[in-house]
Length: 158
Image (cartoon, one colour):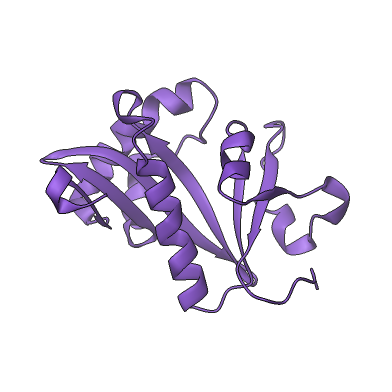
């Protein structure tokens, strides 16, 4: 994604909260994202990256810490913009951020898109290998799966 094709990825600003809420709404309705009130999104704008085409927000992703891992959440792309590499680019930003800041892994908790995360190098984490520090990421009843991308050269799950 580059300025030459009109798409720009940048850190979210407070004024992006309402557009993130609107972009996320259909995914929340389909049960793919967790509902987050506008006030909560506004408080977490420092965790978000957005992808914009002109004045329109076409994608977003939140990043939060969990122990030695960086967690990708609320990743969504406007339906008419899917398949153009925007999600891949946003996850690439998270990978670069995680590596630069020395995190062990990148995590994604999802009810959808496990195959998509697999194409990006993530591996599904078996329930038996889920660390205690990650358990608070799971919401009861959502039946989500956890995917991990190792960012460091150490391969152990200590």
